[in-house]
Image (cartoon, rainbow, N blue to C red; front, top):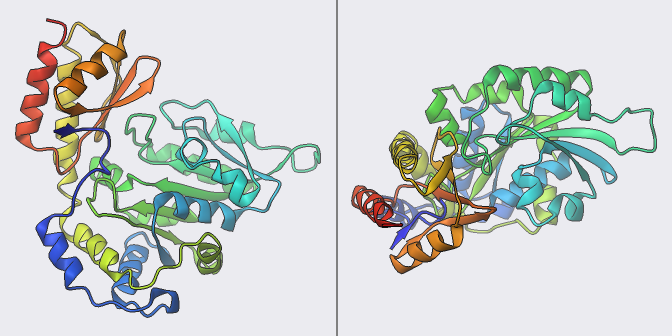
Length: 337
């Protein structure tokens, strides 16, 4: 089986399992789990934030951040492709009573001018009060695209001018850091809150850390509890994340290289109409008959994602081997012949 649906399908390596089984644990609801405390300390320090909190999922971490930044009846600004809008079960409205002002960005990325234009006049009481901007880096539906840092800084200036919170959904921020070579502390200088996921390219079974400035992070424990995210001896999961920090960041470049190679390869095939630019570990391409392609893949034990409207998606990851890489390209060369 060649599974390219997502980088969430990976299994823990032997080294990661050893770290998990040997973890020192305690009751995290009482903040007595030393391994969780160490993970939170490391992530906060890495991103230049005051504090951090371990969540079971990325969606919960994002939803907590939104709830911490907003009040019911308010509105956040995000791209039309944003994960917080498309893939978190309507949690923005369900959990926080907040609506989304969608921006028509480019590959999931928006500009400072678009943010400026999307802000509702604060003295016009017919409109929701704008209180938050949510960015995503890398972008999921945007094909793993990375923000230009100058644009992020311009958005920060707009947010500060209008007293808006600024949250980053950093589900694949590790990929962006490897691609751009940025220092993670730059994110702490710009964003009020940042979520970083460990169950995607980093290869852990679960877990996301939300890091942020002290004032807003005061609310994090209570909001996590309200959302049902309090965990007990979760140091076993935190140990996996610490192992990933120590061993799985630099190797993300291998995933990027494979994805770029796949994008180049797919662009040579006559039945592929378009391949979107590939920057990190996601490849989105368009075909005329996606059903035929999906059926061919199923017959050959290949799993990819059908995004609809002729768009298909591949995501490379640490369990996608060199042998699978060669076999996938061999099989795709046979389609249509």
